[in-house]
Image 1 (cartoon, rainbow, N blue to C red):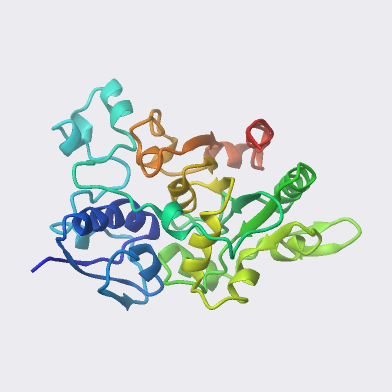
Image 2 (cartoon, rainbow, N blue to C red):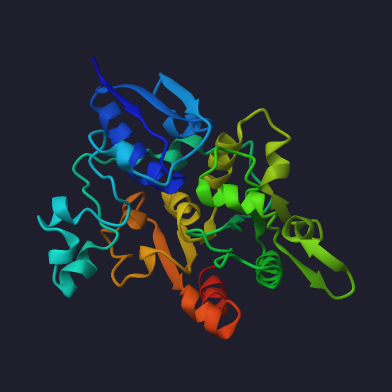
Length: 315
């Protein structure tokens, strides 16, 4: 009898810690079943026995203990260095940040499996993966605002790229606590644009011939939301993403991923070393852009200067 995994943590934890362990078990013919959240079947394409049971996610990883080798996304220093994080020297902490125990960890080759000719555009595609959600119980801080999206859409389309824009409406999949708060408060990503009026980011995409909204593509095919994005992302030439689950998923496809980070342990020094899970998923070129939320609060706005610079250097 093989192993049964029963998991419903935050999305980022699942694709970093649970999925690679499940695939490792699969390669050894030791995986019997995965019980996961609704909509996640496509991430476990290699398992014939997937039950999409849960319609919610939990921010607690307690249920992962005794099930998978890594239960904390930001490091596994106990397995890697044999010490608790608080007992590490400062230099050892730098080496531990973002590094997991990879002894039973093999990321599925999503790009190889899902690459296809059906979901391709006429021009090379760059994915912009945005979010607008509460973060750690606080009002949204880290996101690409309307002005930022305008600059990115203009540059990429004028440089010969098509753009796939993703910003979930929080109706596509089971939610965690922060996403539930976002819906309850009616948060919407919008701004007043001169000559047009107030528009949101979805409306902004309609002003461009070569900018495509992920939700519109999902509605045209029989694939699930997650299978559609996996098929599209597998055909992408590069990514611009938010840190967290968005940036982690974009790191699975072996391309350049410029990821914008405002909060969480990802701000720590050394987090994006060659041994970090961000780079170990596919050997991709991850470029972190750090803009800590305390700096955003003090200046009253996000700083996208370095983001734009790296975008123009790489795309």
